[in-house]
Length: 251
Image (cartoon, rainbow, N blue to C red):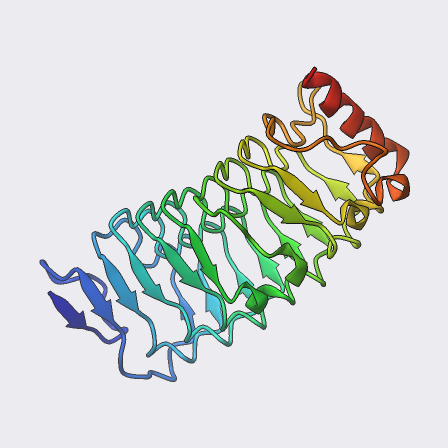
């Protein structure tokens, strides 16, 4: 059953699985923390929330039955708080075309969206400067266009951690990144190729935990990364040592 609600609703009527906020309400400029989190909804249309400028932590967090969400109204938000759509294990597609103003993404952005295979219009994230921990970790994506992140300056722990279907990444837009935290591309077991490795030329700090960086950990399908790879010579000595250790671990 579908229900069209106004933003005054603090609860979802029993039996309502598909929700639309159809009527624009200019007085609503933010969502509370844990907006509709843990609910049983299967789809949600947010087109009536065009005046939203900020989203609280836990937006649609752990909506385990959610399959479709219309985010195209969120064109006025400049940052995304933690746990945005995290734990929506049946969500298959997201569209970021309206996210052009976003410069900061919080922790666990679309984390544990195990069915998420398709990201549409990721170019909407091109102005993002800072990404928190567990960005798109444990998703089902086969490919992601990282080349759009021309403004990116920092990334948190566990970047694309556990994306076991991911096959290729391109680092041409990572030139502003100077440090890589633990769990970077951890357990991307299908990852076969990396393009434009020279985009990591300014990385001089790789986080170590328990004596390990967990950099590309368990990425055993990846083609060798050594001096024969174009752009390798541009890398810092610190990063070259990490790649050397990675190659040694596969022998």
